[in-house]
Image (cartoon, rainbow, N blue to C red; front, top):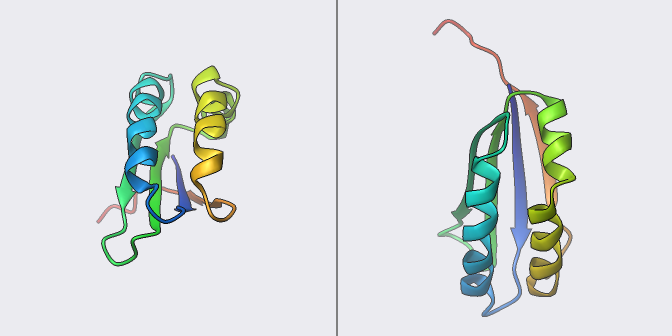
Length: 98
């Protein structure tokens, strides 16, 4: 499984608008083949930050997601609300037997 975190820095006063746009992209993404989870988290310690936490079956599913129409729309809607480039990190997840 592949875990993705995408940390967003939002312009002052724009977080509510960002979360409003995110509802549609989360609903559409959660229906994608290979998506196990896709959630936007609000950073309660920093008013300008939030983070997508994503769980994908594999890299191919994530790559297909990046090509989707709803992600293209999300990028268009969110770009004016962001104060900095999104910081994306990828993690491989495996069962540990714990």
